[in-house]
Length: 478
Image (cartoon, rainbow, N blue to C red; front, side, top):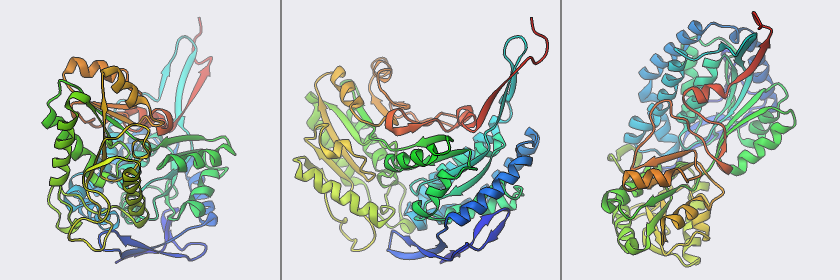
């Protein structure tokens, strides 16, 4: 069992202001796999003070100095990729193949992307006669990250913040904090100057609220639920600080009438179930042409029934593990039952654990048919391997249903290129994936509507951590 009861503040592991131990639970067996401390406002104050002091010097470092630090971080992260994958798998249940091939490397990808931006990003430039535009680090960043793709979200914030010249205080999820401890060890070994990066473990009330409301925090970057994001905005408003939010989704996946049904539907179901459905951009609403609806449901159900549910340590490639925690298990089970109660038809899966499991937060890959877009399971983000299939009469109706959601993080379209592009332009979402295409490094990620504010990735993500200064009278004026 991994135990780290201290916090990483000002370049050292220091004891919390008040000891309050918290067990980290392995969702595969419901047994403790680690122990941390839950912090308080006093710990936040100490970490923010360290970050504020470090900002004075880190913000003035050269691009070459930041490149060198990021190069060291990347090299050490690569060496410790196995440690990172192991921590993620044990604390949030990602199957070992997924943790090794996607979860841990996702964080590395964001670090590599942040380093790449420094090769050609223009921090200064002339804007007409006598005007110099200067992009400067915004200051101390409060970072609050979730448990579902933990390193992906930590590095999506830390990488560009370091590249921008900002300092930071990170509060990872208390349900999956072990990977963040490994990450702090990586940054420490890389020689990140004291106070530039600080880690305070804790829950929302104890650490998240004082961090987002802290008067010396210049910006909050948050990833999590829309409900929690609302709270972060309210707390941040007290001191008028910038807020970047990456929130929930209920992403549509439109199967057009000229799509390859077998390929498109099976791919959509597998994508939905990956990471046990715990992805904010999962294609959770499949929209099928009414004339082909029964065939779509049959393919989705057959695909779901073929997905293996296995313990993370012994999982095969393509298998799914447990949900990440007890609360998520209860939520998903409740929403599956809600779908049944509201009249949807279970085409695959359903309530309860899969056969062979009597403990652990395992769920059945589930497909609901006979769903309309007003049902709870079509409106709420389930965050489990649960697909709802909704019929439509025309492309116009499909677009209307797709956009009829408070979310707008991602959308998916399957069909001929001409039709898919036409539909893609009309979807209100930050990312639209055509025929299974996935974004590479530098692709902006973020949402419309209640799916968030701002973007992560590429120069878009770097700009989130910069202020824009117009220096007027810089040089000759006409």
